[in-house]
Length: 289
Image (cartoon, rainbow, N blue to C red; front, top):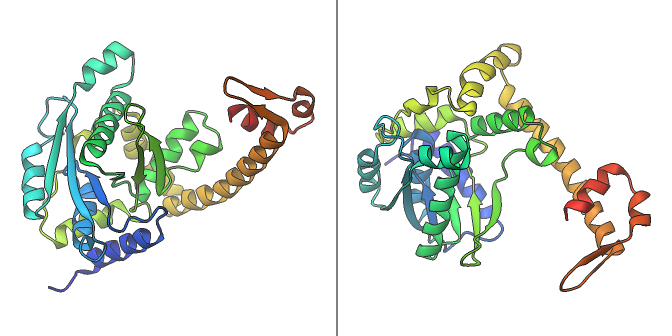
């Protein structure tokens, strides 16, 4: 069967990212975070189609955040999608409202914490070291804006990375978060699903303005697009430029740290005299190491 245009673009993008990934993803087991929405469904479809040439084991993982609304979280629809794609599905459940109340978190942050805990534990249980996430370039723009509003430094303003290493404390495992769709538009994941009759869930929670990200998505970004229709590309350019600055500052700070500190099993000693003569931009980085 001929691969449709948008699906071909997703597969080509994903193949390029798989080939370029360090560590190598070939022959790995991958947990795909799956909500049933267009982004994660298109990602799951693409990885399944590339599983044979890259010798991948693909597992889907769905987490119910306890929001008690089938329009937000529909495990039955996710089961239909994974059955159609012949993928095994892992499921989990949490109570985000209760966690938000007990820990004084926003509901959005409580959902994120529970979801990532589930994904990492699922990866450890299944012997996988890679979790694939369906973040798109639209999500990247929202993330950078959100970090800007929160007063983030360079780390936040460079946005999400294609590969991020996480350490699982209990098992001491290293888990990689893999985001291969950061160069793909949300509209393209919708088109991919349409081309392949996947019928993803339309997540009604995206219009819930209790979530800060949704207010950015529905109110702020449309206004920015009136000023610059290519706002995603503008933020991508900003992220790329700031990442070069971030890496230079990090590498320079690490070199100074190694030259001016002594480390033993119980403490780290830093030469205050040397630190005082270093530029403040580097001082903060050195102290964070």
